[in-house]
View 1 (cartoon, rainbow, N blue to C red):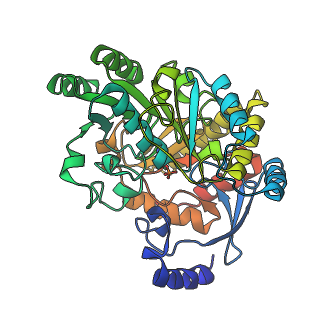
View 2 (cartoon, rainbow, N blue to C red):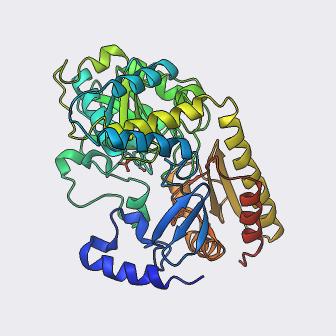
View 3 (cartoon, helix red, strand yellow):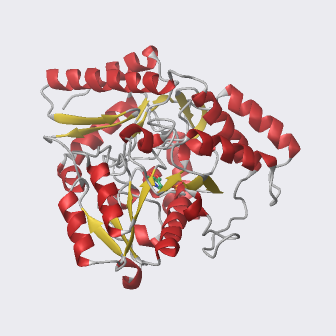
Length: 426
Ligand code: PLP
């Protein structure tokens, strides 16, 4: 493949945009080489500025669960665009999507729309602090909850990809209120509660982590967190920005049968437009402005174009009783067939998978936490990434990310993907 136009565009972008990108992981810094500049996307495929075509396993980092530019979502957007892009005033549409979500997701009564997953998580933590009157939170190493200050402490995703999980600019004062524990290590969480009695407002967790690669909760970890929160008067926040409407319509709450107190959303909920949301039972959401004292606001919150795209996406998913099984099946086939090929080649690896999220880790016995993820062979991942890219398969450009499988991936795409894996030389 040739990347001449992408290369020229990246050089130019570097003059005007820091690092040439508007979100760090897009820069291919960890895998090296020139980031591919995209031009258009349809279904399972992306077309870049050099007219190269790729099967997409990033899907805009999760939102494009139906595949790109789904015709029904596009139609909704056209209709809404004719009516107006943004009003800065309430619309019937916002109630329609709020009603649809709260009626179809367990354990939430009210939902507030924002414009990104970062805002959703930041606001959920503020609300948890306001509700409990406590300051500290527990987060897990390798989990990413957006780029708000409290979370940039041993964060995953782009933060760790660039070797800087603790960002300069986060004050000591902020950092001291974020307590860290190892993912899947319940003893550490228990110890933190003992060391900080009646000080911890909430635990925030990716119930299936996607930002240190895909890492699953083990040994009833989520259930045990629920119990510890109950015993200690803390709230449990499920960051379902990735998992919400992806692993099940009711997300990880439904999948693992664990009730969270606060849930955050993003990605799928906006159907490809910039949206986030946070939700909880009435008792908690009533603390939020304008009803309560915990402040939160947004010029473009509940934007009608985003609400239309989100609602239509969620309706399509909800009306298809086989949707999640189909996605999980596609992902299972990819997992087992890729594993078979790599085993035949004698390439040591481990694939983690849940629903339509999966990651291939090289040279490891297994990955259950951030330390394990760091020990995997990232140089080999980088070679795998470039091999796949050159063979028309667009994987996340870092070994600390999950693949997002879309409903547009069919047998043909799976076969092409496996064909590319078969050509991989260790
Ligand atoms: N939470 C999780 C689990 C995420 O994966 C992300 C982004 O990838 C965020 C929060 C932040 O969302 P956004 O990038 O929309 O701000």
